[in-house]
Image (tube, rainbow, N blue to C red; front, top):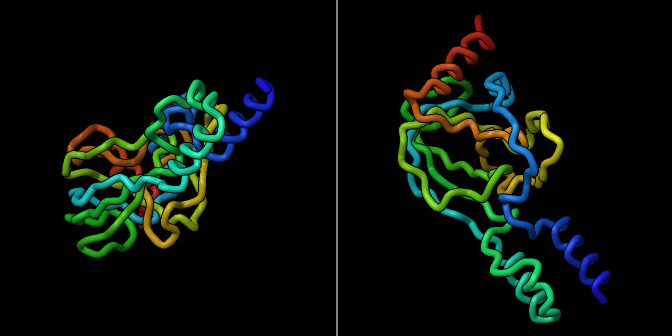
Length: 187
């Protein structure tokens, strides 16, 4: 019975029901040159930030605990799921690379930890990618990379297990990103 419970727990973890904080065993250093994977880079302010919670994962977790109370000992009061993500609008002040309207919608499926409940409005330098484009390379020993939560919507650029490309507009990282864009896209 315990072995069956163990196998069930492993299956649940693999199926994406683990918390976002467990998505990466080790965080890796952000490589500013990964901005080459961006389709759009803007300076803008975030509005309408909200978490999109996966109701299917929550119902599955409840059903598993109801079916076998031993699951409670393993998963406890789990509130974050890998299939949760954030959706927000960006009021664009400046386009640094690519093409963007004055207002765009983006998603963020954080590969390192659960998404924050809120974000300050900014302004930020934000790099985005088309979900159909390639993901930046994995440089760490582990990661969970799932499908894009909204395939038709730009998503925040983030290499697996690294920090996202969302920097306060006047920060050192934002200045480094601007310099890297100039280096990459010289005429």
